[in-house]
Amino acid sequence: MKEAWIHLDHWSKEMVTAAVEAGADALVVPAGCHERVKALGRITTVSGDGDLKPGVDVFFEVIESAEDQERIMRLVHRGPVVLMKGAASSSGGDVESAGMRRGWEVIPLENIVAAGGKILVPADCIEDIDLALGILEKGVAGVIIHPSSPADVRTLVSRVKAVHERCSVESATVESIQPAGLGDRVCVDTCSLMTEGEGLLVGNSSGFLFLVQAETRLSPYVAPRPFRINAGPVHAYTKVPGGRTRYLSELTAGDPVCVVDKDGNSREATVGRVKIERRPLLLIHADCNGTKGSILLQNAETIRLARPGGEAVSMADLAQGDSVLVSIEQAGRHFGMKVDETIQER
Image (cartoon, rainbow, N blue to C red; front, side, top):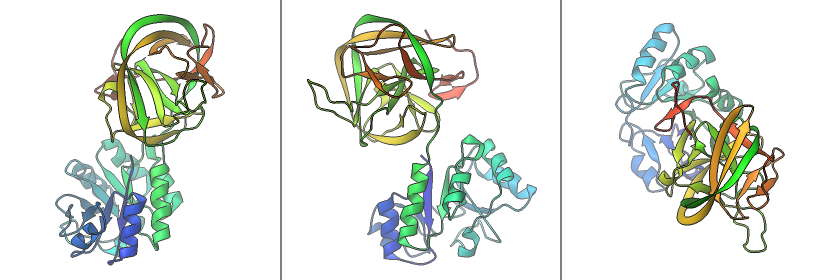
């Protein structure tokens, strides 16, 4: 998830409370405010006496030249780097408020993002946030906001947290459906309510994921559970934030997952509970323009894939020749990360 840091020039209980309630990740505050912040909530402080100390744990740097860019590209491997505008010291102490306004341009920032490491940039409006978090389709790690009011805190932090990855989804044709015996299947209960057409991307291969819908529909036998995805067996991959995948068996309470809709829009949800139970399974094979993939799902009518228009199709009704939504990636995976190497998954 992208991070939102709040920079305060002086102590303000209202601003600190707004930052905590909005879900900000850190507060940059003057020295001497650390304990007062902690009395109001659990949030990381950045100051000379805070959780993160400038010049030691985090680096506030100016970028005004190619030499600055090279220096920052070396620094990012030592800790988070916050880009600033104007003269500022990276040796520690308080951060000059005048240096917190937008101090970056797109091209050098692209170069730094491409080099890896954690970069945060000043962004004091929605346009700056959208630009910074979309650079190279990956974006910086986060932004640091210099708010003018508690309402400003809530609006801008909300924008940062709402920025989501896009997933490419397309139509695949079901080639076969067959019983696959018993297996340990995973129900993922999230802390978010989902709507018709939303769910998790799941599959036997990390490069061929099916959109498995949440249990949003009323059934004669069970009430809707719009927070739940009956996602598949323990070995299956699912998409998580940061362009990564994880095995369903690895998920636990507090982990983030990507909730995806029929158009490929993605938002982050937090896992609240994972239930693993032994259930009868179906093996579904599908083809997408010559690329083949498969998924195992519980043999029950409450488990549904998504048709191209977003409508749900139950395991009880799915038939050979049906079209379902999938997400295709060509790269392989190593510990959940994309790698460009030859990998076959069958």
